[in-house]
Length: 204
Image (cartoon, rainbow, N blue to C red; front, side, top):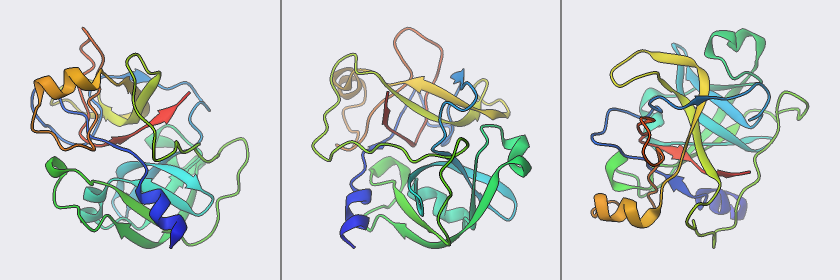
């Protein structure tokens, strides 16, 4: 359980724009091939639900609100949702939702997925490097959030993995003073790259 506790402390990002429209990135830049080998598509029997990160060969971190759609498997080895047949699928054995999660707007929107077997790490799949629990986001930190999203507000979901940049946490607090303490805004300054509602942090 010690390892599980560590993973549940993995920093969660909630990125908000002018209004909440869901849990996918709006706009964003298309990710180059093989640049984020830790990204997985969390799926149920109907298809893609949420993005996630491979944090260990048999553990994936995703958002707790994704549990509503009863995920059953993860697909890794592809950045395009149309090419999931070219990826590799592993069933989910157990879901560990944060015990204090209530809704997307109140924080703690994080869940750990135990896979039924280990992912074979190779040139199509790698684990992400986790920051320490004492990590702080500084001004102009080189961080991004990643996921599958829309090309425009109220548009259709695109199939390619995309990224947006985080913004200054003080600017975020001034604009949205009631955000939970474990929330980080994203979208960038002076851009039209919108927002996401639940994403995860990674460092270059």
